Length: 160
Length: 260
Length: 86
Image (cartoon, rainbow over all chains, first blue to last red; front, top):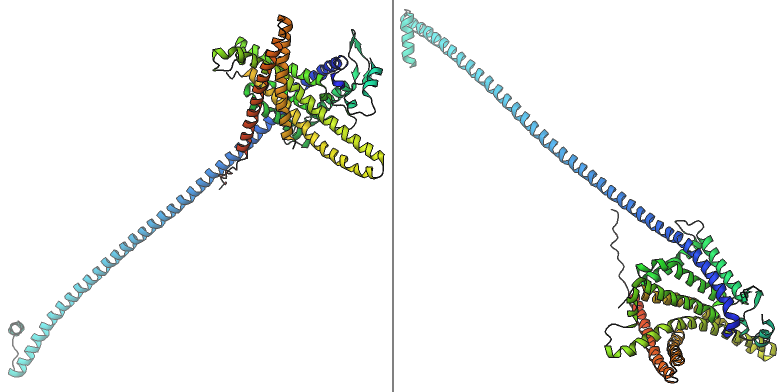
């Protein structure tokens, strides 16, 4: 085997190996940081992108929550508004009813008062008519007309 | 150069061992030492240029969204980083360039050796042992540098009874010393054996084809065998590069993190 | 594919390397102390033991790796607690 012919084969190979491998090592030592750097940069970029996406997601989440809270608030506000409007309306209604009742009561009272006044008046007139009628009847029967005061006393006596 | 004598010994017309021979391309002599540019050194330079081009053009743009080529470079880097992290831990990060260079150099050398007419750098024990010896010395130096004298406790497993020490310590030393041998011989043997097998079966194909007649038909069998072997060798080439790098991280771990 | 073969050669190699290193150490000890052939014999035997130790370690390592692979191959429940945006 030529490989074991060391005297001829070993030294030039070892020298050239030292030279070429040494150069290769120096080249690789100079070049590998770039390779590692790219990988690192990629990792950090991907990490940054993921972070940004996560942040965007969180942002959207908070926005959605705020939106939902806004809707809920609006809804409760509207509900409150409706409630108060209802209450106001009921109050106004009540007041109106009360006013109307009062007006009606006043009118009834007035009408009753008028009625009793007129009745009193009528009753006074009726007495006068009765006295007159009594004077007439007595005049026709007796031919003399009684005094007005006597007739009135008789009417009052009969009426009671 | 003893060019003529080697020719006589090794070039018996496409013998299965001829592919491992070192052929000088350009003679260089420095202070009496033979440093000729050979087919082996040419392939080493080729590997160097290939890896440089692979890395340079793969990472030229270094985009955040990588293309196919850049993904390959990054995947390879990630693979090595994972291996180092798993076997050494965070302290091993500074060794990533070395492990990466080792892995990619051996990987390209192994796979390039499967190309026709190519030379497999890693099929030479001198090369694999140079790697293994370098790693071995590096492990010892790192161990002593990081842990001082305490590192020699590595040769004494915890809980050893005192009367077994004279036996255990030599065994541990032998075990430790055999690391560079297993590391280098494994790679060398795998590369050499596979290439010899490929060559022998290819020789069968040729000689059966030349024999003509019915033999040419029979020649299909070693051809099919060679195809299957080729696929197997591709896997072996990748696995052996991986194993070499993996064991290097395991050995480095013993020097960096004192387990006991 | 070829895994068993690769593992087998690896284990054989561990044993052989242990013996080789042990014998070499014994040889150097002999040439240093002139204790031939006892250093070589002792080194060979120690090397054999060291080879077996290495072999056992390699097997254990392999086994640990396999059991790890088995754990990794266990079916896993996909975590589908991915929260939808809304």
